[in-house]
Length: 432
Image (cartoon, rainbow, N blue to C red; front, side, top):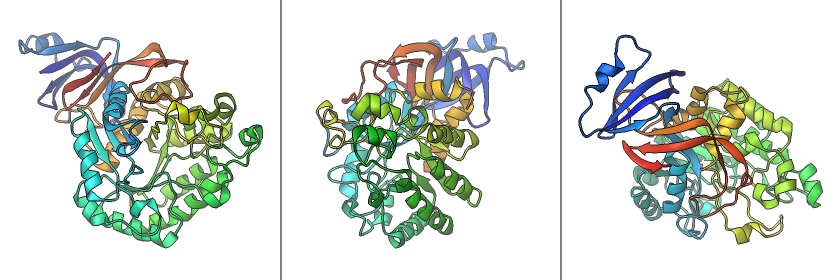
């Protein structure tokens, strides 16, 4: 038995916080002793502790449900020099994550049962809960749908061609209808390539700095505006991935008023940084869709605050140092994010008054678990014992990573929120 004493519990379902002790046994939260409940005397309860119980002193710390990220690249199979399932899971544990949903743009792509079996098999040995989406189209070519039914039966968490937009509206419609019938989410990377001269850099001040065309906001809004009406008609649980522009946030807001099957992700880098970071950090701040203007960053934050954006996902995208050292137009897009996400949420959203801790953990744990039907996402008796324990005011410096890659624009920054324990299925999988 594992007992966590004296921490402040974040209830992201009921939106409250309270001091208490949590008892974990056989992978389940078997008892919660609230120190604010006058009906229970914590001292008396502690006298009942089994002799061999392991005790964690969480005095002064917060206890949240383990984080769940529904948009992660572990590059395995095919690009394991950047990351593999083992190293990626260590980065996840260090960042407080107990649940991960992988993207399918590997080599080979996860468009077949054998590759899905490989990914899930390796994931099952990591100590945390690793799920995987599969592709929408064969070999991510945007022409022919995969066997969605067979892949759902084989354990697919959802469907996405993340990294490549789907350009044929009728194919999008059929994919949504089939995803709806299967009860699986379907996620979309919304960037119209016809609008983009150079990806990864906003078509504005940043593009002008580098003397390139860049990627305008219309590249995103074109496809978001096309796909949301189809999503409403189909009823599919549809996710607009890594939203970046104020116009796209408003389109999602309006669509959510018409149907509860519309979802959107925000990444920590899109609610923290603007295109100014690309000018100062270069390729370390290049990503698709790109960092945009301050008005867009604030719109993303407002979307998180009012529930328009219901998911915070890292889009953890490892690349080697050699790749990121290439010129801005040649270097790949993407940054790692699992190890800094919680701290950025604390610094940019909670400490600045946009979200409470229960709201933050709803978007980083409860809502992802609910959308994908995953274990965790809640702290209550009978729930899975998936937890993160952290000191919100303690600071740390972004220096070294558990990830194989270090392509982060936040290297050298001092951040709040030191993670002391990550617990999955009742077992300590990370300890500071």
